[in-house]
Image 1: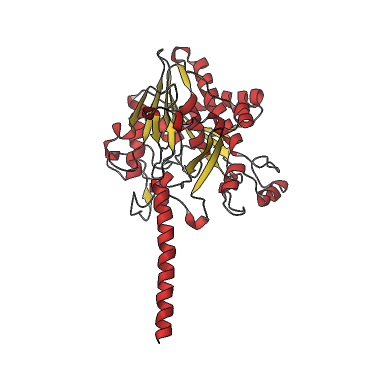
Image 2 (image 1 turned 180 degrees about the vertical axis):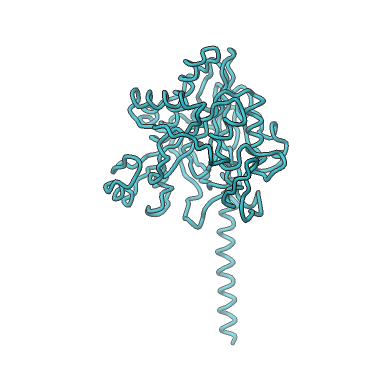
Length: 387
């Protein structure tokens, strides 16, 4: 009997140790901070709670960076990490944040839109907790997040999410998906308050263009594209054609569905005067028939199972032994953002938006993402913010 009791005690201690180690890892992940260096173009930093008081004091509140030129012009908002397991969005936004100079107009950047999702993970799917980007001064570490906000911040989930204001029935998880809760409401669930605050920012700041950056599976048809509603379609089409002709990569246009509610590229256009766009770049990491979900797969996009599927014509993007590296995805996003601003300026010269000192596709692929990140140890303290 004493031997059995001893075994039980050892088993309890073993389980307790494993639980403690795992809990500490998740705790450190949730509270890990990545330093961001505000670049030469940043003129003001606000909080999203300045536009939606329901966020004040919550982990969902997040930084909003303004890059305003002396010359008045158009206004563009970049939203990144709506889905925090699509990290090319964050990296692209930081390239603009740390480098861009706005010569005319205003650029507004929210690099960590779903701050709760960025501090969440999918341990059951084997997600790495972090990934690192090489720079000339060392490695810059980032949290790998989840698609939806953490249940630690918004709970419980309903059996069915009833979207406001259309009352369309969506999956219960969509109440924590910040690309399903637009246009939000001030007295709703926390993620609805988040998207409502963003809508208030767009309306109060008279934003002309909103670009929501994402990534999608190679087996998903809506990938490697620009998603746009009717009001944004002309600029999206001209952007796609120009990128193909001038920079050599495909970025086709997909229409925003009018019958599927809660999407940023639908609701922003319907509830404000802004022209919304959603950018998708291929993200092999999110495909299901892959090997282990490693940091290498996330950064390089190389997987033998996807290569076999590509040879059988099962993918919606070209795929070979080179995979889909992060630099290619980020480079596409940078070029698409700059080209949308350029096409808008051509169509609306009285609201010109001129952005310089930001790389395009070929430069990012050639030089690497990390070459555009500033060394926090050499930056002024007042220019460092944490993500």
